[in-house]
Length: 214
Image (cartoon, rainbow, N blue to C red; front, side, top):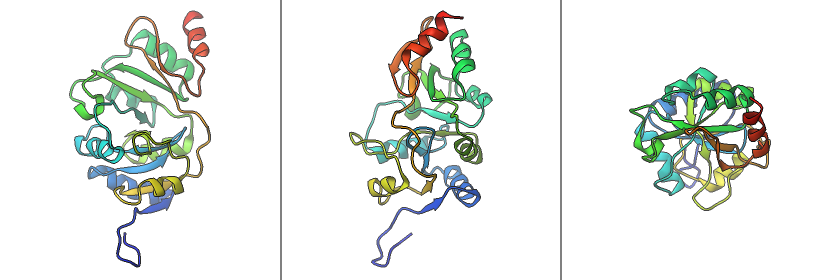
């Protein structure tokens, strides 16, 4: 899309059926969309497509960090997780759908750009019908690293995304303002005990209580 001066602008559309179809086409060809997640706006690409994941990293201006994935339905997590440990199953049953990203052992064959060589992958099932519908329209799973340049705060509205990325994105789906001030909580469940990576919407004490009360 170009403006009157002939400069390329990032395409954007209100979230809905048309935006879903446009996003599906973008993701299928290895492109990147920005969309409202259950926390902030995220950069969405096909997690199984190295082209899309690489483009996400290039947009953010960062390298060497794993990228989390959001799924439309709990079963979609099995496309990325090698095996659901008892700890994974326990916390997913207690907090999904919700703002909890579970870091588990990754299935073989996932793009190196997604796992950053860690052998693990972070997956979340958002507690938001609109977000899950958007992700479902794009194939059931999307990368969801926050929509911002490295070192800058995460974008909370479509307008902020457009200012941060005046070009480079294939589509910004305007799903309204973010509904939280906090990111998702990220917990590593690859061991016998949960390990906190980042505390966010769900308090760490809730995670500990769930495990101790099993």
